[in-house]
Length: 446
Image (cartoon, rainbow, N blue to C red; front, top):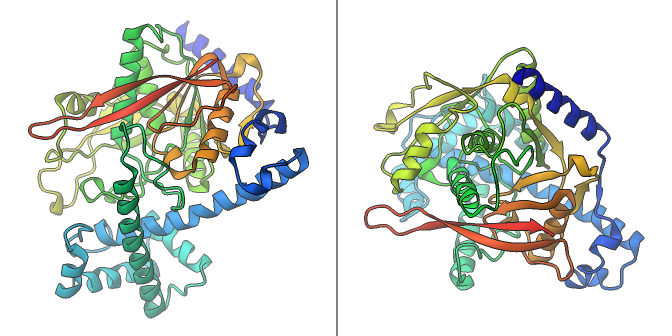
């Protein structure tokens, strides 16, 4: 019986992973890279490396708080769940115009009121806890308002700095993003565009013969994100519950392309964000009670994009779930196309969240438990070249020989290391009058 075989594969993998501990990368494996790092590691031995890794792990995790505050600003500007005020654009002097018209002040007041009485709004509940951890009295509108506006000012300035950095980078290809966000908060953003690029890349790899039918069984996703609210106004929504997309979208793609067998996929999800891990653990608890996981899929039809992207949106989830009636968006989003899919409980249970910092840590996996495929999109751009080199080798340590890492960032390959850039797939995003693309590099374990 196919169902029982799938369960057996899942249980065997789960038992193997119970024995897999996570640890900082061993000194011997990173020694060739350390000369590229900070001066304090130039003559490091094993104890100094491990002490630095532990300290740097804390430094990286501390960036989560700033990312959460960035999400608060995005909610202030684009959210619709706590206010009836029009949204505020970050572009074209939108903030100045909104301030002059009184819209910014009204949005701040509405957000502050929501933080004081969040009800069951999970985003406001989270932000209230965040502000309180910062020492802000959310029952005092004045102090909350000042804090929100200070963070808005910070984000505006950071965007100017990032724009200048991007203009100066002059990348030679879309894969070269020069660690643009290396000193930015680690955010929760997610959306279907990277998932579409991954599916198109996997199609390309199948055509090239790099991947074959039913080859993929063990998969990992690095930092899938949580749809709190996007940083881009065109794709920023908060009218539905928080959700994660990439694990289920990737599972869906692998089955659609027949690169994996249905009910025979085991997926590890590596993240350092407690929100993401808790979200997935709660989804698994519901799945154990035979309750599926619902994803909402709004689509802004006005956004440019090729017909293939629209086709991907229409089919997303059909291999791992069932279409259901979507939540109706607010009237402000006139013309927004919507879909919703209930992901099957068995698919949810095949996905396990693991607290792991890919820059510094790896799982110690037996050969049979190593991954066929690892996917990490919009992740490595948050780290500098040295950190990217460490992350690449940590990913390689968890891949089977010949296994692949897919990412939309160019990672520095370590001489004598285990990973090589085998190729790049350019995914066209062209539409009428607009030329664009997304590049995905595929790195192979030697």
